[in-house]
Length: 328
Image (cartoon, rainbow, N blue to C red; front, top):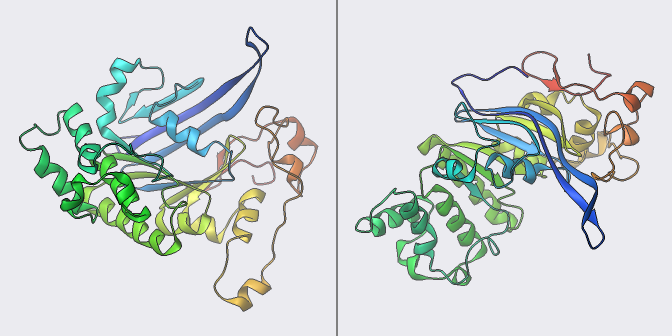
């Protein structure tokens, strides 16, 4: 993919994240789980890039590599033009105030022993965003920003409802005024009625604060609603990237076509008339991925070329990138 410019906040080039498989008392390495295998994409400033795919395809690992919670096995990650993939921890820490993360589980991602005000306030103190004298006012302001009453600052997480807990998680992510937020399936653990509220809140915050989102999810209908562009991931690789409307109207990769065919349509007549694509087989193990195109064992169009060589991610026009030999 082309090199980014000042409008690009994140650029990922040939990212790889392998986890070693060890056996025996001496923990001898016998292989790798190739969670992320040669992934490249860009995130433009103030946009939302949706990252979708089945569970275990490497979406969360990609997000954690960008945050440098994991040190990548290979490749490059540029954040605001600076290469960060191999920086030591002491140089990464000053950059953390510019990045935030909203985790999937609002129950497990918050310290159950800390009051809500402390959960949001401690990052402000660590990164010198606020002094001790002004901390209480800054935390109260952040609470109001996400729709929480500042009177809740003394409560501990178990005293909040699920939706309130996720709002608290969002407040923590916003504490240091980041420019980039990784949203790691932020609504999948919530009731459907609460999901819409959280999506609307994220959109309002993006407009108000000029945020950039990497929105990780497996629900393609939600991602289509919130994202400017969507990247589709399968078994550690990006197979298609396009604008949200373009991907919906003109999916080119067979895996994307199968995903879209599974998205529910409110109209029963339209739902009955459309062609549903049922993928054969199971997702291969990332510890032993198939040769060539990773999707070839389940693809109805696979040919000999697909089983021998890996297709490159190439632009077919209007910013629509696809990794498939049948799409030239």
